[in-house]
Length: 319
Image (cartoon, rainbow, N blue to C red; front, side, top):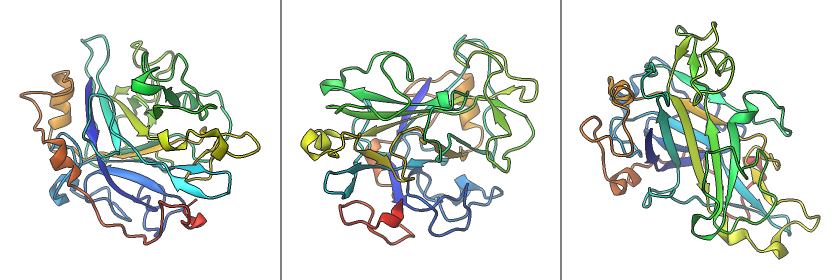
């Protein structure tokens, strides 16, 4: 599986996919990869051609990846943005996302890479309970102990939870977010940014399950991991007095069930298809062009929404 880091590009209230043209958008996001990220992103735009840098390890990837932002809700009622940290074996990246593109596990079946203009979302920011459907099973959390303790096993299984962990995570919390793996083969987007894609008819992608007839084209398994550095917030004396867990997404979601993510494709030429056909792993030597993480970290973007989003005195309008 292709696994790499995309450092944080910007943190601000913009969402060119769900609320194009709206400045500011309803809630805060943390964004990575191409510095073409903007209030509106016309699907006809040549994203690689317009970009001057990418915050990803692979320099041919100018896609944009974004998710909601996590806050700590202290006992005194103030909020502080939870910082991010680099993932295991990807040390040196500045927050952002760990991104996976995964071909079928059987080692034989191919996938069709996304095309220019392709975009999609997964998850529902308004969800506050486990709805028990295929989409709700695609997001989860992993609670780490010191030195990555508890990091074994596939995401979403074992001790992972659909809701926020109910205990202090001494080594941090990881968000796990899987996107659909079947496409209708025609539409690059849909009004809800979901209907043009689907999950396997039965079973799952990693089990080799078939796509539904309505969405017959297998696409790569796109998967995000986001590492939240909660180590500064592990003192129970600072948690809410009512015993409720202290973390909340920038959507106002204090359950975790509203975890969601967005994606706009922006790979250069046929780079992603070549990587999938070659079944590349972390370095993808000889197939993809890479850059040092220190160079990727330098790709940032000035915020367009001027407001405090980090400290205890930030505006609650960021929710």
